[in-house]
Amino acid sequence: MTLTNNLQGKVALVTGASRGIGAAIADTLGALGATVIGTATSDAGAEKISARFAEKGVTGAGKVLDVTSAESLAGLLESVKSEFGAPTILINNAGITKDNLLMRMKDDEWDSVIDTNLSAVYRMTKACLRDMTKARWGRIVNISSVVGSMGNAGQSNYAATKAGVAGFGRSLAAEVGSRGITVNTVAPGFIDTDMTKVLPEAQREALLSKIPLGRLGQPEEIASVVAFLASDAGGYVTGETIHVNGGMYMS
Amino acid sequence: MSSIEERVKKIVAEQLGVKEEDVKPEASFVEDLGADSLDTVELVMALEEEFETEIPDEEAEKITTVQLAIDYIKENLG
Image 1 (cartoon, rainbow over the protein chains, first blue to last red):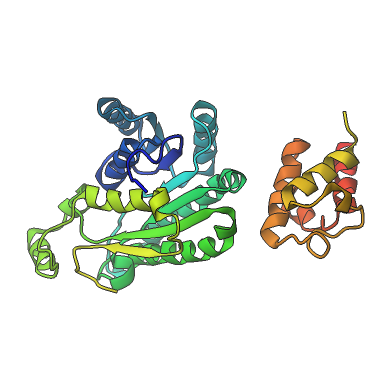
Image 2 (cartoon, chains in turn purple, orange; image 1 turned 90 degrees about the vertical axis):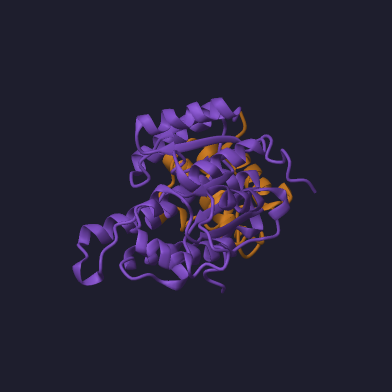
């Protein structure tokens, strides 16, 4: 079995694909032959994705999507289906952080993180599942975080969503396995992206000292694991959470 | 154009992987035709597509036999 070009003919939908881990996932799936729809929250972000795809020879397009809006999602799926066909690979990657100590946390900081990181996974997955069950083939990969397993002060909202998607994935894997659909979770550790660039230098140093591999991960190192799960090579893996964190957390 | 009965039976047979002659009006999807809960959801989705309609969840739950499916389609599209 080869990993090369084995996503030919598949349509993949990757949320949050304008930068960071999502961008690397979209590009990698595209390099393996999939038609990729990468979503961003703004027109500028979507155009950036389209331009990147054109530059790298990836078939597909960048599209605008607000993952918290059912209307936005319905509109996106309609245009994707007519332009490219129904997605049977769904990568729920879009996510935000609104860190605060719980005692200071505002309802809005809690609600918006839950809505974007967890409820959106429900929304996206439900909307795509019908076509996957019809195709008798589907791949759903949800991007979680090491924080969902080990916890992190100041991130109770974020950690709740990231642990949540793993449980969601296990349950859904049990529901739709008979239809040839796999559901998995990839839990990155600290990856070199805009989300981790905002960390204060001292916190960064402290983190690095806890990572056996002694460095932050690269987005491509998450993308390769997602690509494996999306491909035929990973076809017998389902309901699993794969930690990719340089050894900072070993479950 | 085939009748509503024929179209419903054809879809049930296709979705549940059973022979059309086994799809009797009184047949229960779960008890007689071996459907699991996911099959029944998919069956309703297939009926929605065939008859270009939307069946509300609370109505869908009541459609447990071939005849009930035929009746629902007739009442709502007739």
